[in-house]
Image 1 (cartoon, rainbow, N blue to C red):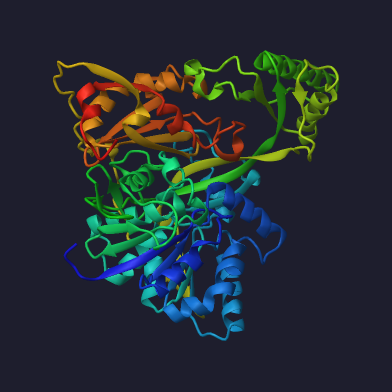
Image 2: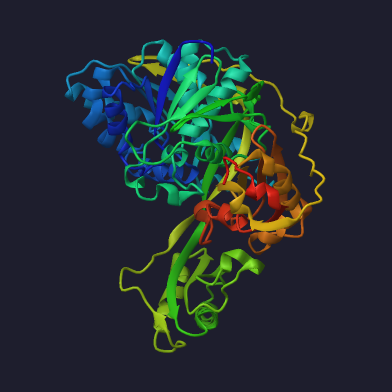
Length: 610
């Protein structure tokens, strides 16, 4: 980091509904000598877009993340203006212009003169019929009925946002863009990065990836949660101090809870990535395999070594569409043989419901899922508590008719006096059928998407560099570690003793990132966790556990990390799934229980890991 210029960017939001703690923290940090240049906000996920699309269809003034206006702009705009902090947010959702109008009204009401810019062009919903020949990029399924489409959005990049900043915008609002673009845009503007500055663009994108989930980089969902359990009520939100070469320091506001160390930053780096040597974004393809993480001070981690490749010639584009109804109902069984009682109750409730469906010619359920919690069900063949005396039973069904889905709850509840003993019911509101919203991902050529930039009253088309075709087969793969010769006594320990882990989802896929607490453990972990071992650990979740391609494994020599990509494992993923964990958030915890054999001496040697 030889260049003196650095910019400070704070990540304030990781989803729509995030706590409003971040902005006050950042403003206080500014008063304490840690002044930020930008605060970025990520509100959008695929399901969020479908919800916002429905809101806009009912009210043309809605369809955006209203929290950005009510929770950020209105209460804090004076303080933000005083400190000269610019805001970049994808709060526009499916209606960026309405969001901008609301922001401008709040600014005027505050008596301030600030420039608001809007980036549009991502919304392709009205063009649904044009994509009828497209196939889903992972499952290869046909394009859904255009009449069922709720939203179609291309994931735009950072350069239009940077252009808005170049033209003096104080606040930039976008629709759908890749999560890291709001951070990368500030870097492009401040440092003058060009489309072929691939390594810098990749570094800025990783900084955005670290910031985009808020406190997940500062102790949230951290493997070593107990170390910070007492102060996460005041969890600090992440700050990236970014240099002109794309390297950065990850930090958080002083006097806040949480933790910034190699583990928290490394876990977030691995979160929801696929191939770590081909993390594809619209502005650059990132290779995280050689990233270096260095603890330079308390709550300060230096990040460098990201490699960039030329931008692709397409946008990832996601459509959401309605596909029937689902109902998921919980029940509780307490006492001896709780699991067997729950299974018996579920079977009889379904028999009774199906009998009535047949009698009314309503057709059978499209899908049924019965799961229990409390009996190690999520650990499959490796569970250790099958005879627990209390379980939560969950019965889920899908049907084209919401009344048929609701019938399951009526009949199951109606069996309350014809049940095995020990049934307990929650005395609150009953669940209701909800729409099954599915995700359809595809690639759209950049030339087919027109991006528009509006700064103040001026609107202009923004030309995007076309990019180049990308072939993952051309990647020179990182060499995995070799297991050293060892003639000493071995010791079997759970993986969590040797590594941190974090998992997440992309559609119906889940990734599990495993980061050694010390790189010296990497060869032993790599040897113990091959694809077959991981496949056996998650076979009960997989659509096709016998398929050799159901698990992919990637090595990252810079940190010694391993990233696993598990295919067709989330029951459809997101709100299309009826699973207890439809996003794979718990999968790292499951894998961290796997036994790994290491030399006894490694465990007794002083290490930063143990």
